[in-house]
Length: 430
Image 1 (tube, rainbow, N blue to C red):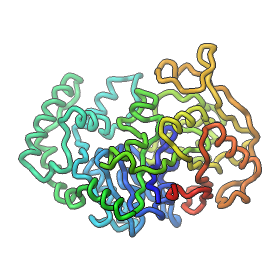
Image 2 (image 1 turned 90 degrees about the vertical axis):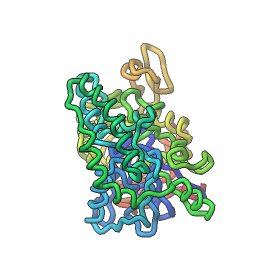
Image 3 (image 1 turned 180 degrees about the vertical axis):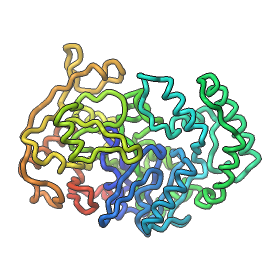
Image 4 (image 1 turned 90 degrees about the horizontal axis):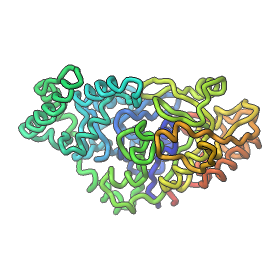
């Protein structure tokens, strides 16, 4: 049986939460391997909606181990609040169900203050950060001044590290004309939650290695999407971590052969939250239609998502770079009722044709989409659970998407409900 990594193939918000939840019934362990609580996964189960940010989607299932890997940056207060929220909906969360890597880095209040101050001085050049401190926490990790979960076990060392970190950041905050932070206050707040956070802490790489040796199936749950990848996305309008399937191994402490199948979650149209280039954006009635029908608001921020036609060039690029074996196509039902649909099959840049999305920020803003128009369908696809229930034109649309992106549709989602899913191939079979 294969271990599966789930990654987004667009700008995030592709419906990973539902797909991961659906797949978790076939897995034994579900692992988050990058990002922070800027990611949002929405699950709808038996009419109950769960909005998760840090907790792996497997947490809602009784017999699964959920793991927060070393590649994730963890806001301890946000984590504990999320645990209490899901407990309030009847979900059991305890150290037997949830493990946090002892070498995961922490997001602290100083990171959030910095995030907001830096975004403010960017003015019109803002990158659309959620201001939750994710970027500054990753910066501290790379700069080797970060605080890790395991540091909570050693108060004296923790205090010393905090003093060094805060001294560095307060100098920057003063230069930005922002209020500085108090190291003693942060230390006290950390000590207040240390024992509870540490109760979930474990040696994740060892636990996952043992699970693999026992033949257990591991599901790696990515956050955001490939076009927000720090290396391969629309830089600088990206997040601060890698979405790439290779990060599933690095961010959980496993070898590169740990991932056997990469599933790319792909929306049947395109959306984006925040700033940055978006070639197929429809700032018109079509965009309004997609946004209203698709309930396109950020799970974490509540921000309205920008909407546009499906960009096959961008998804094809994500398939190749991310090593995606097959895609889960979501929100097909949102397209119900449109007489015609457009698909971006190429770009034009200063009179030249491109079959890829360029890296340059300037060129990304200037590319013009080349569209192919296909027929829509009047019938409803919502809730369909077999190909036979789909209108002929909807089937044609899906098949054409496969051709254009160079990857098969493994799963087809037709509503937010867990079971409204058409399975063509079980990713766990490799």
